[in-house]
Length: 519
Image (cartoon, rainbow, N blue to C red; front, side, top):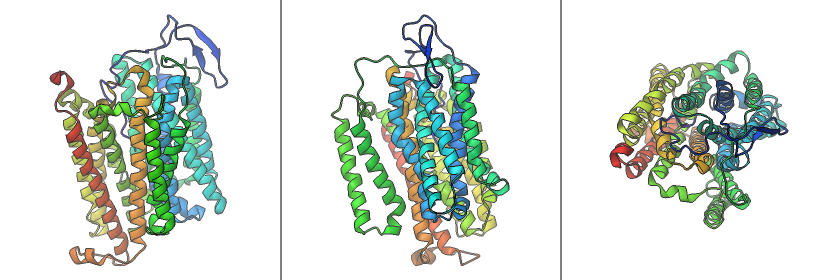
């Protein structure tokens, strides 16, 4: 899942619209170079737009099917569920780590070039996952493939948003952003349903084979687009040290979150990894505050509205954990197939697509703050509907159907106002980097939300029943799956806490009313 841009005033500045000059030489992957001093301005068309959307779908539709089909994949590849949980979350982790890097580099080296390289990573990653053999080598193929899919998202998302800013204007830009958002939101919304149907009727491997084909088609549609770069001053030095520190800290933290219960929370290895995360996190912050071209430009966070929107975006994306927890509960505790569980999410897919434009209208009428809070409250309601895991399966399935539809409604309300609040005032020369930071919050939020939620569920469901919980709540029906149902309840409560903190961040940072009313 991703909270993607869909706002009327998403990119308020007008600098850098198009590039000037006649087409120059073509580079090895087919980008027509244009100089920054030409008299012609390229206008985006549907071929470019739908090519970009195919790249977005490859990440948010095809790659995200693992949230639903992970038990099927784990069984087929002979992997433990804890290992599969890492494979599920590692894509969002690597996307989050590198999305800011690639957003900044895209501004410098060319946005079209970065998008095309993203397609290449998507093709490689999809084929590695789809062709992964069973056994020990299967985990290697799977992890590498999921990492490459993460790289793909990091390359495509910020660079493609910067292209939308550059090559579309006015109503055309609003339409382009809306369709881009529907590709992202619709892709994530239909991922569970699509994955379940494919895994049940065709085989999960074909999901990723088709993903490779879709990426190839998208690459051919984008290929040949005139290059777009930001006007820059002075030389650019890549912040390799900052990236390395950040990656080490995030990977260490991810391993602690996903494997801490298995290794032992008090074991020297877990404590050592936690210390690594803290030390390298501190080194990262120190480095970013001292270099001329930081990987993450902390000066952007001086704007409290941008900061609040980004933090709440991180936290609400973390509620993607409710999807994997509920899917695992229905399959492991209720003996539903991946297809049966995926069909329950159809309301999520429908409402999220239908209400994205409603979020835009709410933004125009009320400003960003109110619809962001309303959307967060609705997401909280959707999680609360999944909490009664003590009920019979038939009742819980009905609650799940309603919950997923409400979840999509809440995210539809939240997405547009949040993105507009974060990005509408970014300067043109930081469009890619600023979008990258915001999308990093999406990816890392989803990664850690899924990882922590799955870790809580896996750890508690493998143990004995939680006696104090049994003393408070009576679990009716089957008693052999009570530990699984209790584990899901605790993991869902964690997601509800994320929503509460997100609402607090919005209330503390996002101003009331519309910008013109505060002027």
